Amino acid sequence: MNGERNFYIWFRQGQLVAAADRLDGQGLLAMIHRRGWLSTRAATRITEVCAVDQPAGLCLKSQGILDAEQLKLLFRSQVLQQICNLFTIQEGQFQFNSKAELPNSEMTGLSAPAKEVTLAGLRALQDWSILRSKLPEPTSGLVSTVNHGGQLRLSQLEAQVWEFTKGTVSLEAIAQQLQISTEKIQQVAFRLIVVGLAEEVPLIVEPPMSSFDMEPEFLLDQPVYVNAIGQSDNQDQVSQSFLQNLVSFLKGKA
Image 1 (cartoon, rainbow, N blue to C red):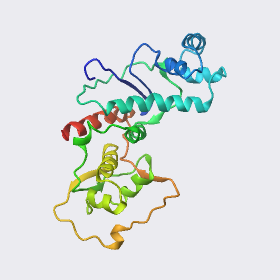
Image 2: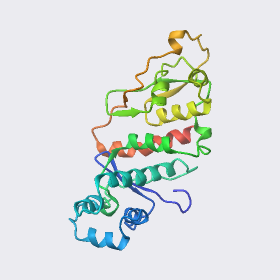
Image 3: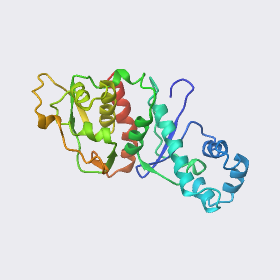
Image 4: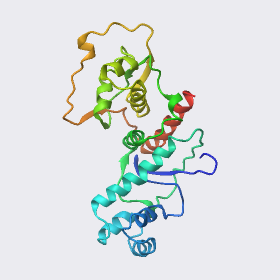
């Protein structure tokens, strides 16, 4: 995408099933080797005798080499690493191939919705320097854009910011109320925007905030779910819109 850097993400029926920065089919096996669970050579020999359409991760699990928790760890590391890399690219070119075969050797057998992975990837992002200019303005507000559809589980802070998506309170005012840096609130707002839960709106005149406005009620001890924008029945469109909408947003803010 950027110079010599290439990243690959595979979808099936709207779910992200694998990610890699190589096309030799050895990325997942190399991760297993680095963790000391099995040599790449041994893993390759084992997966060669498994069913043709069986993901490598499930194959190794069926042989007693890996357990369910190890597969979850591999999938999280494999996918989040590549998603984080996408957000560090200043400029990139995206190509889609709806006829590409799924790389069983790179698949753990697990999957996750694209928006869920995007949200998790942004949470894990440590260096926001490239995205800093893309963040919503401190004087802007947020409005909800949700419709019926899949659900996303929000973190405690995301849920707190979500309570202010009425387009009446600026991000810097939210930061002051929650006693968190404005930049941190901007990053949370950016996450909500990228996954389609909110939109940035300018605030020309900001009305005085009553105590009711400043103290929304939260269920902080329970998981918080928010309906995401309705997904298309065409799963190919779902997987493609993930990156298309993301890149369009980033370029539009440049």
